[in-house]
Image 1 (spheres, one colour):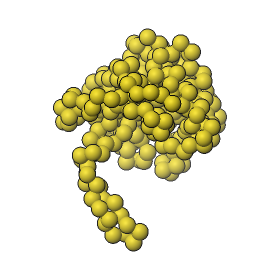
Image 2 (cartoon, rainbow, N blue to C red):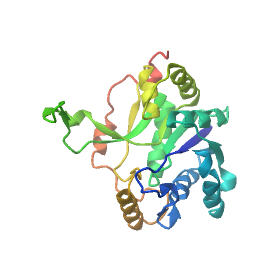
Image 3 (cartoon, rainbow, N blue to C red):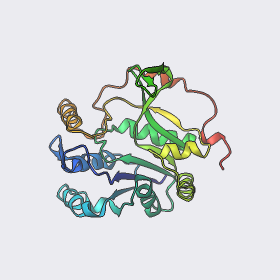
Length: 259
C-alpha cells in the first residue's frame, strides 16, 4: 500500500513568548526532528511531506539536514490557514497514495502503535482519528458566567493526530471545503461536514500537543522517562482501552454514500 504523511508545521508558536517551538529541544532533538523521526521509523510509510511557513523553511531544512533526514522528506510552503496548508501538502502527495496521515508537527511523542492503528482504521473505515476519553467534568456556561448545564463526559473525547483518510476522498473533500469557505479546526471536521463517519482510534494521553512552555517541560519529562526509541511503544496505554475494542456501531466512513 502507498502511505503518505503530511506534517503540518505552519503554526506561529504564539503562546511560546517568541520562541519557535518546533526548534525547541525534546529529548535533546529539535521538536520537528523528533516528530519526523516518529514516522521515519514506520516502514509502511512511503512519503513524508512537511508543510511550513515560507519564513521558517530554511531553518527547518537545516535541523533536518543536521539530523540526516533532509533527503527523506519533501518540504512544501504552507498557506494562510492550516486548512490551506494541508491542501498544499495533499496536492504534492504521490498520486498513487492510498492512505494519507495528517499530523500536527507539535506532537512529537506519537507512538508507532498509534500510527499503525490509524493506518489500519483508515484502510477499513475511510476516515479516523486518535482519541482519548475525557476525564474532566465539563460545564457549559451561560452568557453571564453561570453554569448552564453539565455535559455528559462519557460521550466526549479529546482528539489528537495523526488523522488518517482515504487519500482520494480527503483530497476531494478539501477541494469542496475550500469552495464553500469552510472554517475548521481539523481535517476530521471536514469529513464530518460532508457526511463521513469518522472512526475513533484508541490513543493515549502522552500524545500531547506542544503549545506552551509547560507542555515543553512535560514532553521532556515524558521523553526522559522513556527508552528513547522514538516511535516505539514506550508509554503506557490508556486505561480506557477496553472501551474502544468493542466499537461504537456498525456504520463507518466506508459504509456510507459519499457526497
